[in-house]
Length: 254
Ligand code: G
Ligand code: G
Ligand code: MN
Ligand code: NA
Image 1 (tube, rainbow, N blue to C red):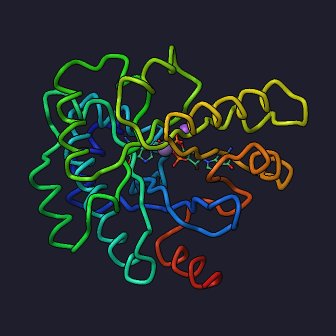
Image 2 (spheres, protein in one colour):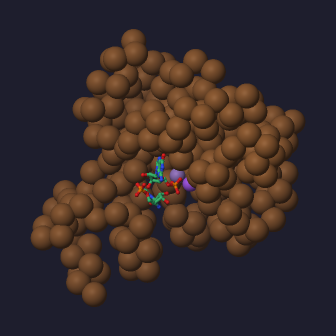
């Protein structure tokens, strides 16, 4: 497949960029965080989804360089947004492979944060259950070091993997992101609502905050707010947008 050979020089050729999707506080409706989502503009195919190229980047080992680039780029933006909103957080997705063999260059990441005048709380790393499932001592060790730097962790796509509940206890996690498959079918008295309510109740008892993903309708927003869910993300508020467009979203509510 051509993607493999085209992906290799893509970083150098500056073919990647980030989009940001707002995460709103459900109670106030205000944007308080953003999720960074990487995009690749292929010279002939146009914008390629990360669903297609992240697995390629993982299998070729390029995910390490790409992951570092995403982190640096996202933190650069975060520093800009925190000038006006000191509590603003940006979350970045990390591949499980970045944790294996201690491949995340924590020293470089911490140095970059301090150069930008950012504390660790500026960033949330979104990880999937797959990482925790296979977690050996190296993964745990990296997670502890990240947390020492103040970096927070969100469990992404929650509810789609196996035995999620055990991980909540074993790992130091700050946020749960309820997978959008639960949000899609939310109705009053639906099993999905019961699940969301249960997840929120459990999370709060464990001291975690909850983000619901894929909110597309006001009815879904209202049900999640009534279920005491903390934050929401989805097309109802905004699609993932370029940083300049995100600036306008922030300015519009200021
Ligand atoms: O952006 P989009 O909505 O198409 O995202 C599709 C998938 O790609 C999501 O599961 C998301 O977590 C993943 N993804 C987006 N950006 C990144 C990234 O920078 N690194 C990794 N590892 N995954 C990403
Ligand atoms: O796996 P992860 O949660 O990182 O994936 C984020 C993905 O969800 C991105 O591809 C983003 O474009 C997509 N997304 C964000 N909001 C919505 C939404 O309201 N509906 C749907 N169907 N997808 C969404
Ligand atoms: Mn995510
Ligand atoms: Na998700």
